Length: 154
Image (tube, rainbow, N blue to C red; front, top):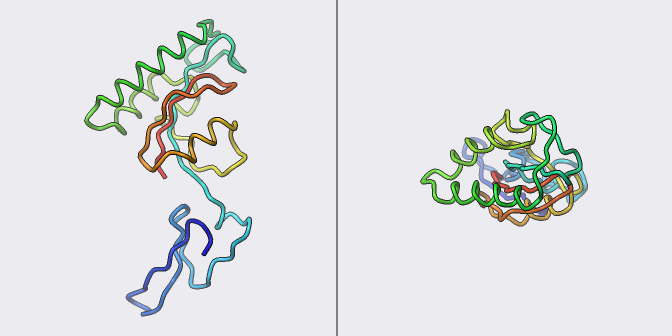
């Protein structure tokens, strides 16, 4: 069976159907193992980005010109991660900090980037996102955009 799919039993129809855990799609027919969207592995993540002077675009909704060095961005991300890990509700704390401090425009959505598949994000970001368990929180990672922490939702 293709990745992400499982067989479930319909109580109303008294027959098996197929459910994709990644997309929420249900269908009666056996899922084909193809490159179609329904079979493609996807993740959904929140992230918090701190840009630095060497970022690909050192500007954000918070600051028109970002001048801090990489080391300061790393220090800030580490402090945010420590606050999240110490919180009783890590998801709520992540959303709060992403809304306030992320240099990504996704801050207006509490850091939510939605779902994406392989090949859609910068490689270190993609690899980290796909390697996390659901509800997992990454260590700081560096991409061309800046320094991130990631929370995997699905």
